[in-house]
Image 1 (tube, rainbow, N blue to C red):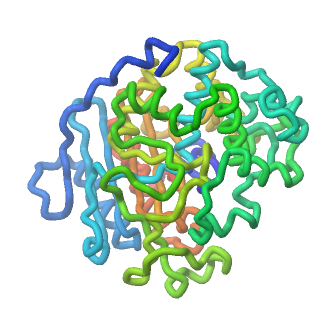
Image 2: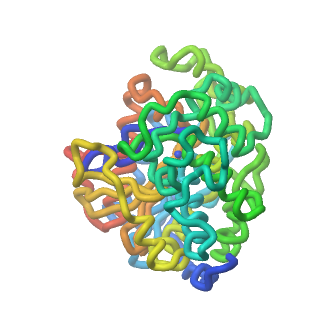
Amino acid sequence: MVAVSLLAVTGLVSTVGYEGHAAARTTATPPTAPVRVASASATVAQSPRHAQLNRLAKQLVAAGAPAVIVRVDDGHGRPTEITEQAPWSRKYHQLRAEDEFRMGSNTKTMMATLVLQLVGEDKLALTDPVDTWLPGQVPNGRAITLRMLLNHTSGLADYTEDPAILPAIMGKDPRRWTSEQLLALGVRHDPPLPPGTRWSYSNTNYAAIGAVLERVTGKSLADLVRDRIARPLHLEHTYYATDSAWRGPHAQGYEPDAAHMPPGVPAESRDFAGAHRDGQVDVSHNNPSWGGAAGAMVSTAHDWARFYTALMSGKLLPPAQLAQMRTTVPTDPDQPDGPGYGLGIETAATPCGTVWAHDGGIPGYLSTHVTDPTGRRTATVLVATEAFAEHPEAFPELTKAAKTLQSAAMCAMFDRPAPIERLPYYR
């Protein structure tokens, strides 16, 4: 998973994945039918901004991405959906804008939403020490609160850096991981920081959150997502994955095979399991359960936009809890007024407008989701490969093309031109 902040400096920069509340039962307003641009041969009339997105999507594929989905809703009733894919990948799957996609660390936004729903029901408190719910499972657990887990100020080490998880990340270990197992991997390493010191991204925080959610509710994370978010919002292709199975048509995710992996990628990260296709490895059917509460969600561009709209408009959380979600800590201590991380979501003032966002990476899938503070405007870029985001120096052309497209999509969301020549970027 992409394991660092999406919004590292002011602007668009990444240094890098219901019951109980009446408002949550309100169905989000279905969006107007989108303008779809499937390829260069599309006959749909395009605005200059949409034409730019289409051109940048093609450039991303030309730079090495197997496929990309772009969805932008500027709040004017005509969402635009663009799909582009490399000719070789069409032999195996014809990409659709509606395809399911692994969402990686965007999962954290949904997990934080679940916690805050329970806070609104007085079943949890953000000030609860983690030791209250997971006694003895987290070192110094009396000093680490649920808020610290949610906003990455706990100081805990990141379980994804433990060598024991690497075979699962590479698709060679098909076991089903539990929240407790993932948490145990993270806490067996000395915490790099004392609790509450500063922001430091760690997937272990959300492994602990997953374990707390299961403990306090007695339900699985899959059931909580289904009952409290997916069903109330009619998100038909959104679910928490516990194994490699997909529920609907899905984008195929790829990584270069060992022979085509750039030299800058470490040896232990070069050889993914999966079917070999045209110099690439199809990692679509590798088990993502190692992502757990930090990264195992599956969704679509359409579903996630609906989720963001419901979240930011108050349909999922009471006002007090939504305000808590949007209470941030700086991601860079040298920029206290710069980008901030709230509870499972980030924010920054960019050249085109203030955004709330997250991204996520899991092998084969890199997803970036952005919304304005009201939830009326949303933008999504889904790229069907992810190693370049973990090792950007090894994929310079692909990294630059992805950042440019992601930034342009965000500006298109605000119906503004993207100052691409000077705009910092997402990764």
